[in-house]
Length: 459
Image (tube, rainbow, N blue to C red; front, side, top):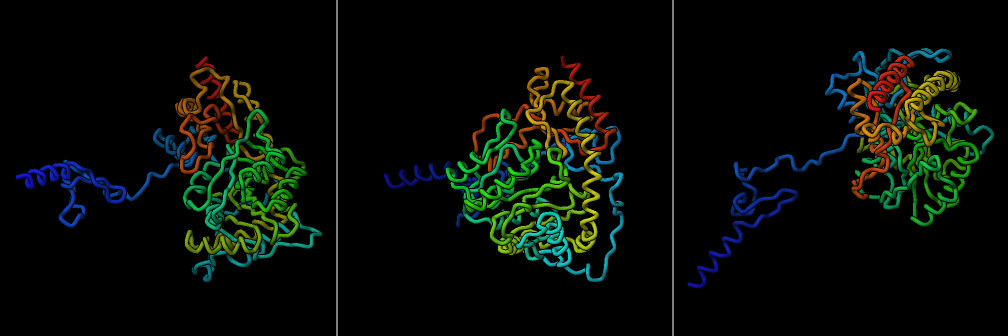
């Protein structure tokens, strides 16, 4: 009698035990005799899509979706979109005429080469050489350039080419870096904090300590910085490049806002100016038509760097994205002509400087503080800590602004946290908001009037 009793007890235990298959959880009732999952029952439903994770939205996508729930769309009247990550795209005085039609040749119906069409690669190399490499012995060639289908694609290609190293990234910085630094899982992202009390500066001494103390082999950064507007330029930028070269630490520099510079007399700032040897210095630059030429819809970007890096990034492109659209690449050749580029950059400056002043002064007048007034980009990184208590949290401010059809981006989205591996404490940027002065002056005026009314009612 003992044997049947033991068998019955064992069966009872097994029937109540939960088993795992991959990421799913089953009881024995869900498994057939061979241990395979059976059809779910009403008592034991099985999630057929459990293989997929929930992918977080970037800041701009999140705020746009929340606004959409309230009736916003990009042609909607009555909305003031200070959350947008794009500049106004219409004509500017002194700028080249805007391109509004795209010719397509027979050859453009075929796949474009994954590294980009040769003519555009050569045009990008020539642009950098003419702007930043005059009189230098080491010049960029087409082999130093990879053409991609937008800024995120360029950054993802480069991340896919990085080995098993420690890679530094700054806090705060561009929201899309969070997923880019997590999705491959090969390298270890290391956060580097930028202190608002110091105006988000990061000295060469701090850079050297971080590289040596944390064993950084690469650093990903935006310059000018999205969202703070901090610009590294002149002798400081030269020192960053020299430190990168000396310590063999790659700088992956997102220069998508390098034509929007307010703290330097030059129209354009780039680390390419301080590279000694284009094939040995570990400087990798990202740029494209999106911001600096004001064609975000064209999705044409590029990577500029040592030939070996471009080869690796292009190989990554063969399985990540397959290459960009040929007609748009061919169109870009004339858009980035040196004379056209110079005219565009010079036209941007007075218009966006005027909008910068309008936005920053308007926000300061209602109590928003700035640890750093933007030295570059078309964003203001506002501190809400002196507003009425109900508006000091960036999510609360964002939702109150949505009620008045004004869109902005809460600061915690820029607290880059790949894989959400850092502490779950509230973000250190929960009292900050990014405001864009990319839209027209009329939109900025309207938005400021609505925000002023919102703050006054909250006092």
